[in-house]
Structure formats: structure tokens, C-alpha cells
Length: 352
Ligand SMILES: Nc1nc2c(ncn2[C@@H]2O[C@H](COP(=O)(O)OP(=O)(O)OP(=O)(O)O)[C@@H](O)[C@H]2O)c(=O)[nH]1
Image 1 (cartoon, rainbow, N blue to C red):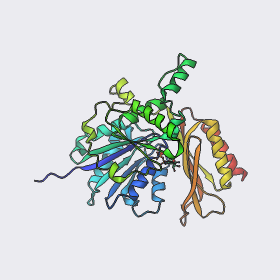
Image 2 (cartoon, rainbow, N blue to C red; image 1 turned 90 degrees about the vertical axis):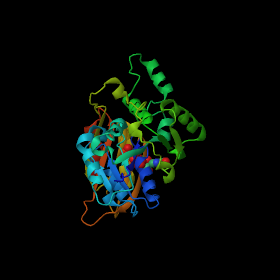
Image 3 (cartoon, rainbow, N blue to C red; image 1 turned 180 degrees about the horizontal axis):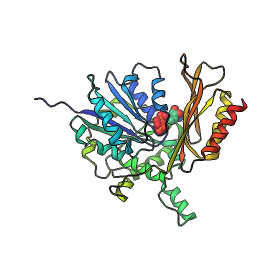
Image 4 (tube, helix red, strand yellow; image 1 turned 60 degrees about the vertical axis):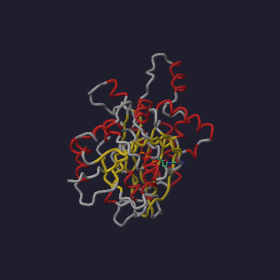
């Protein structure tokens, strides 16, 4: 009997808004005939990423090849969601050449990597590589306090301060899990800042991890796929803070919160974006994304905010019968001032 080759799987991880979906989009568009199945996991209850990819209009973004895991972070739903999803995918008559898993920006990659050793799937799939996308602009601005200088400065201000913030810890967990780091958004930082960010990353990653610089996720598919790492068999040094500190206990995502809000079509584009910018600045929102209905526009406005930086573009025409409304997901550190944020977003919708 000939052994069936295991299907290589690339795990794409990285903090909220680092550019994972953008990287996946580029990968799908340049897959050179490889049939790629995509598993998308999101934090928050609106599946924006799948919708963004499906809205790209490329024939390579086939809806039937995209599977959404929207019931919380993949790291917490391995048994209930991830393994059954993989089994169903592997049972398909038209098996993919390659599988790509985009984790949520708040996921710990470690439980997912370990899941590849579960007997239900181990004989059929292997991790080709864990790719962690890092946001060069956010790092240069010290937004994760992953930057030791910022942490030290904070510590000096308050001796009692826990030196590991939830953001910094999660960032490190995603870094040590990587076989390759894509240092994305290099277009937003100058050469000196980029050198400093890269030096900082090297302090956190495992030895032997490579770094590729990129803008808008433009990485050659050949460089990204086919790493052949078998990462599930090479776990040493990838342990998360949680695994090191609380052996065997399930971890929580209590440090982060999210909610979604639906608004009627109302304000003009600029007015809506101004209000969103203000809400982000006032309430320290980490990530906001979704789609908006703008009066007089026949296309929906995709809105993407990462920290203070907001992008908005009309991604596709509204479909017949589709509700023309604004749906946004908001993610931030706990406690998130849900009522106040919702009220300010609603006030602009009502005022229009
Ligand atoms: N300037 C610039 N913007 C980028 C780059 N890559 C991504 N973006 C923008 O950053 C925002 C977030 O990108 P996504 O690809 O959705 O990030 P993500 O990591 O998938 O986000 P989550 O799934 O929410 O964690 C979008 O507005 C992108 O257009 C880049 O290299 N340069």
C-alpha cells in the first residue's frame, strides 16, 4: 500500500490587524494553480475577513474553499471546532494541495500547533510552517510594549506594575511560535525604525527563525509555502507564557473583549470615519472593522482600523436583497466601554 502524502498546512498568525488577511489575499492571487483551502478564524462575531476575501472578486478566492471558524479563538476550540473542521475538509473528494489557516489576531498559536499531533488528523496533515505577521508600524510606535525600553520606562513609573502586559505576552507567544516572521507594513516606517524593530524582533524569536520584510503582504508564494518544517514535531522553545506558567490549565481570553454593532445607513463617509477615529482615540480601541452603508453609494464601504490608523474603501457593490446597513466589530482590552462606544457610533448615525 502506498502511503498518502500528508497535506502541508501553513499556519498564519500575528497580532490584530498586522496584515494576515492581506497576506492571504496576496497568496491566493499568486498561488500559481495550487488549490488552497483556507480556514479563517476570527475574534468577534462578524466574519469580516472571509467577507473581505470573498469581496476581492478574484476567481482564486473561491467561496467553497474558505471555511470560517467564528466561535471564538481557534486556540480554545481545538476539540470542538478545529479537529471536526479539518476532518470534514480531509473527507472531501477534491482534497486541496495546501491548507492555510489564518488564526485570530488574539489566538495563541501553541494549542493549534499541538493539535496537529491529534491522532484524528496526524496521519493526513502536517504543518508546513508557522508564519507570524508582525506590524512594523505598530512595533515602531511601541504599541505592544513588546519593546523593552517602553516596558522599563513604565516599570520605573510604577514599581508594582506587572512587567508583562497581555499585549506584550501575546505578542511574544506569537513570535516564539514562528518558523518565519513576515515583517509587514514596512511602507509606514523609515529605514532606521525598521532596523530597530527588526533588532527587537530578534530578541523575541527562536534561533533559526527567518524574517522577511513586506508591504501589503507581498511575499512570494514560493517563499511562504513549501517550508517543510513539520512544526508539530518540533515544539521545543515554542511554549507560550501560559503553558510555561499554568501547565495543563485552560487559558482564558479575559484580557480582551469584543462586540459588534449594527447601524442604519446614515452619515456621509467622512462624518462616519471622523466619529470612528474619535471613538478609537477616546476608548483605546485596538481594532475595528466591518462594512458601512453610505447614503447614495451603491457599493459598501469596507472599514479597517488598526489602532489610530483607519483605511476605508468601497470593496464591492451591494447585492440585490442585501440589507444596506453598517456592521462593525470592535475589539479592545478589557474593560471595553461598550455602551459609550456604541452610543457615540449611534449618535452620528441618528444625527445624519
Ligand atoms: N500601509 C499598509 N497597510 C497595510 C499593510 N498590510 C495591511 N494593511 C492594512 O492594515 C489593515 C489590517 O489588515 P488585515 O490584513 O485585515 O489584518 P489582519 O491581521 O488580518 O487583521 P485581524 O484578522 O483583525 O487580526 C487593513 O486596512 C490593511 O489594508 C501594509 O503593508 N501597509
